[in-house]
Image (tube, rainbow, N blue to C red):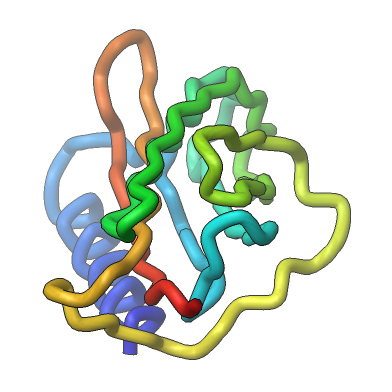
Length: 149
């Protein structure tokens, strides 16, 4: 379902761009990760950046995470990324939900779970990713994972 809603969002954005004079701009095409996480155990998320323009670009990829568990933790990490013209680039966001996280070029596939929608009243972890160009947020996606004991 999450992929379906993201696809609809991308189609609406493409239609809006086609109907206006506004040129296309880089965006986040995907943010996916595990349906459940265990605080203290590694979790990997996939971030896909899309650059539909005719020029290569350097952008800032910013990721923030927060857990609402009894052992609440947060992380913040960011990285400059270069995306070729008319291309996509995949990045791995790795965290153990212990206050640290790393962003790196995805060298292998990331196992993406199905669409899980944890009850927001139950303990969960959220990842928010922003794509920033010269201080302006171009796009933002978020994903939530349920916490398991």
